[in-house]
Image (cartoon, rainbow, N blue to C red; front, side):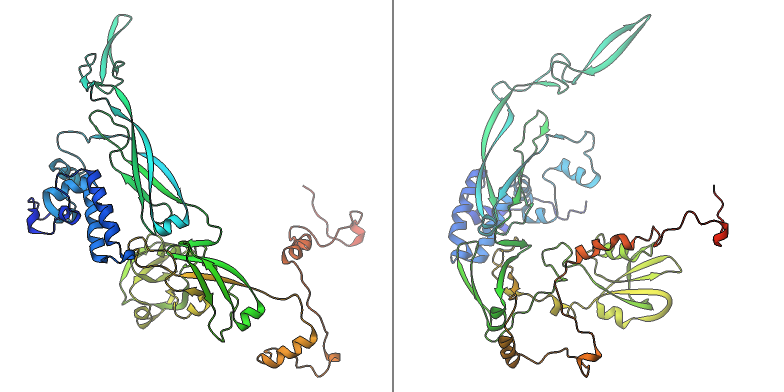
Length: 490
């Protein structure tokens, strides 16, 4: 059926996840979690433990704490998990054909969603938060019995007389409300331990299978906790990178500076500029915290194509902006580095490979335009920012790897300088780039710069820039003698 070998695996033939955690194969979920926490504290790399051992016990806990994964592992071993074998034979038919032969798919109760607000400090260090949930469970003391009113069908037949006709009508059973069984609910309170892994992203979901409300003859839904990252007063986060903003003076930018930052784990970081280094203003066209910071830029080549490079997709449009969005949308991950627009054929083809391969295969083709991803190295100098390496957030999949801590440095310039100070600075600084070529001031108009708000400037003249009106008023008294044209009035 495409699942490979589905025979049950003997735990002795391979590494046993139960032995990794030091628990019996009949251990409960609580016992498994308790054993994992004890071993995690002992083998955590941050506390001098073995990183490989920590990965092993983390994987064992991930599988054995999930009822479905544990069921597959007990029957087929880790190969069963890798091949995606469902937990029961009936699920195999569902996995292959989307349904179980002979019976409709089993109902599942509605999932319960909760949101947990977590600080950046908590996401940095990781934590376990206890959450009490209340749910409706079936009272096993009363049990579940077939409804006698409808014989367990969930519907009842009523005979309705309409004049000389008698008609049978089917409706939901009022006794069991369409369930088909009679049972009693009771409220259950359970404390769930939500483990927030170090470096968890904003919006990460922690799922507890089968912890929602119960219903007879139905699978119990899940309880899902969604992490909501709170705003931080000092740090901004983008992926695994952290950003902190500081203002420095012009003298600090020219002569060096140092600043102290309290990190998310309480450590004090003293950060200095390199000796002799000049801090330059950040490129105002680049904001690393915007959504399109890593947006692709493209080089356009007129009258060109690369026919020897394989096309991974085609589109019957020539709108360049739409095609660019497609490269970072539905085609993301397919290695698209170029697209060719055929304006005559009103179509476009997307090319996969490397920038170098596309440029090497470039051929002349009138009526076509080739768009190639810009060389990332060419513009990297414009994106450079000061950073402390490996002091960002832990990465979600491997907490031992961290992002970087970037400093957004705003340079505060003095309002003015005495002429004497300016003269002394000129002796120390490189010569000016701009100078006047005029022989004397009589040959040019001399102007001094002043501060003007461009928004107010635009608005102050906006009424004079309106193309919908006329720049003059026509004299309504002017008639035929005035020599003006005659206009027919409608």
